[in-house]
Image 1 (tube, helix red, strand yellow):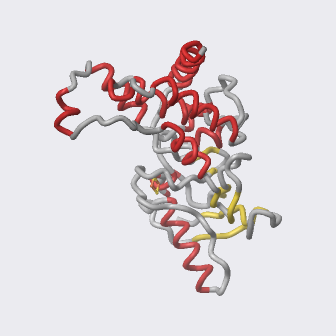
Image 2: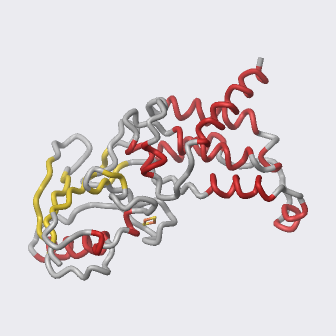
Length: 248
Ligand code: FES
């Protein structure tokens, strides 16, 4: 199959950017979207042109590195998958596909399709961990946890921090990401000691990074490759309110 691509090219953070047209031919439909971009880059390098900068690491939906907006939708139109899990058979030969970076004030563009998502790391650094001594793995297994609570915690912990929620939100809010990260500890006994300080610090950092507020559009949930529920945002808000009262 052959596709036409319109790809956002921008040499640097302060340089002007534009959509540039490319064609890629003889694509195997079983190839991944990123393999198709690899093929494009091989062609560009062969022609002495600058390859397109984009991110990837695991290429199996685990690391969250591969964030692209494909035809206007973070991670593409299939839903519930990351960009690296998108297969070319989801498109038709002859299609024109527009590829852009995740756009948000808190995710400044570095080059072409690569944005800086270290704001998420700084939020995690404020409370996305358990600092109390929980013992070894055997000790953790001795703590009884209701199966429903464990399931809720695991569902929230499925967030891979890719940033699609931010890219999809009209306010560029990080509420789904932070909500998931707060919730995953809230459901577990190991997360109780720092329960209040965690949510206060993470929300404060989220606000200082320039993310917008949540106005319940739910675009984040629709774009999330791990189908994280927006109920985690409600939980974060409840946790925040409780922590504010506990602090006075
Ligand atoms: S490259 Fe790791 S999730 Fe896509």
